[in-house]
Image (cartoon, rainbow, N blue to C red; front, side):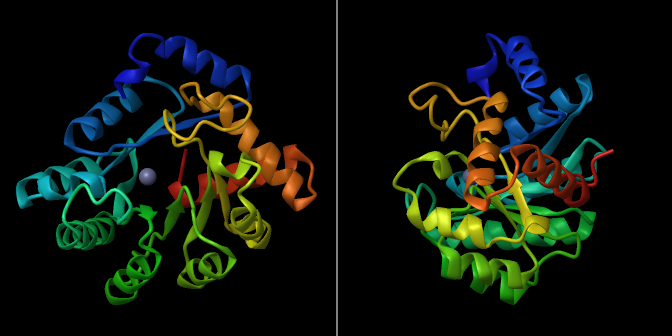
Length: 245
Ligand SMILES: [Zn+2]
C-alpha cells in the first residue's frame, strides 16, 4: 500500500527487530495484488495474496478474475483474497459482492490454495455462501474476526481458522475477548491488517507489522498463556495453512 512507500525498509527492519519472522502482503484489487507479488518476489520472508476486496467487487469482471487466477498460481502467492462480504460500508452492491466471493472460492479450489475471508456485518451470509460453495480443500481464514463466540464456533465447524487483529486490544471488545478465548490454539492466527486497525497503545498511528506483537500479547493474556507460546503456535498455524517455506 502506498502508505508504506516512504519508509518500507524501516518498517521491515522494525518488524524483524520485533521478532516478526515473515509477512504476508495482502492484495485487495488487481493493482495491489500485482504489487504484492512483486514485493514477495523481491524480498525474503514475504509472501502475497491475490484477490479483489468486496469493496471493489463491482470491478471484479471476468477479465479481472482471470488475472487474479493467473496471479494466484504463482509460487509467491499463498492464498486467494481478500474476498468476502462487507455489508457495513456497502461500497459495491451486495449481489456483486456475493458473485465475486463465489468466484474467488472457485479460484481457490482451482489453484489449491486457502482463501482469506473479509466479513463485516455479513456473518450469516458468509456462512450461507460457504455452505453452498463449500470451503476450498486448502481451507481458509476468517481474517480480522469481528463476531462473537457463537459465530466463531460456526466458523470453526466449517473448517476455518480464526484470525484476531488489533480490535482485541481495545478495552471495550468484550464479545471479541470471549470469542478469542473460545478458539482452540491450533485454529488461531494473529495479524495486523495494517495500515488499518492499529492496536493499543499505538492507536491513532499508521499500523505496521511490528505491532502484531501487541495482538499476540493480548491474546496470551486472554488465554492465560505465555506470549511466546501464542507467538509460536500462531506462527505454526500460519505456516501450515499458507504452506510457507
Ligand atoms: Zn479485510
